[in-house]
Length: 332
Image 1 (cartoon, rainbow, N blue to C red):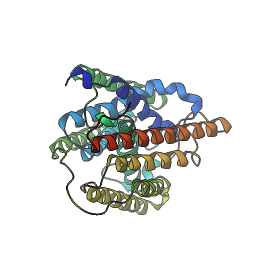
Image 2 (tube, helix red, strand yellow; image 1 turned 180 degrees about the vertical axis):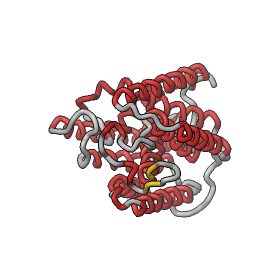
Image 3 (cartoon, rainbow, N blue to C red; image 1 turned 90 degrees about the horizontal axis):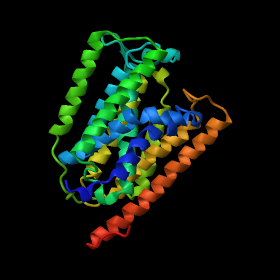
């Protein structure tokens, strides 16, 4: 790829956006521990950036990103944190695995599906879409060269190792080997399917597409519902989450094939998800960093920052789309 097409700034933005979305916007980590962004970025940011680079370089699209996001979820939650297998993860007494318990796999159906949702959609896809909206001219192109991708891969591995060591320092639990093997096989399967999907094709179908504001609002509602489903419903919670996932993915699959579907619609989905995270944070108790007024001020700051990124991405994407439709370069 020509050097003039590389965008180091966009890559750095995604590298730090992913952990900010995944942990701070969600409200799991208080702003008191903002310094933790540095050790979190190699895993979250490295994973999101690596997925984006591989998918864009291969000419694949969002279905591939979602599948690789699910693979990332398994890497983090099955290997790095082992939360999918640990009956008392970090001694939080959260009883995550007891809801929709699957005896022969020794995992919780609700927690596993919840983690797949959180990472595939929010940690990876929302982060990528938000940053791509800030750089619309290169949204479907790689931002780095082969050397850059290798560096990102190395950072991701370092982040996973660091995350594993930090977790083991707090909780010495180690899952049985057969669970690691099973998780590895599913991870590889998801990655293989992601790159077997057809490359991105031009949208050509006719049909109505709701305005971006509507798709964003619906995504906010659906995302907030996923976050608020009571796990005590057990298999009812799993069924509700699966129903929301199926409805969302089916609708997007149909609408995204239509010629009226635009990059602003893609941004609207990420915006709805990001705002759902930010609002949910006010109802959550931080896992790390403590609660209190400082944590709530942090929630305001992170939500305001997300809204600012959404607004900037909307302006830039709309300006680029207008210029592109008339064949003129967009203003910087």
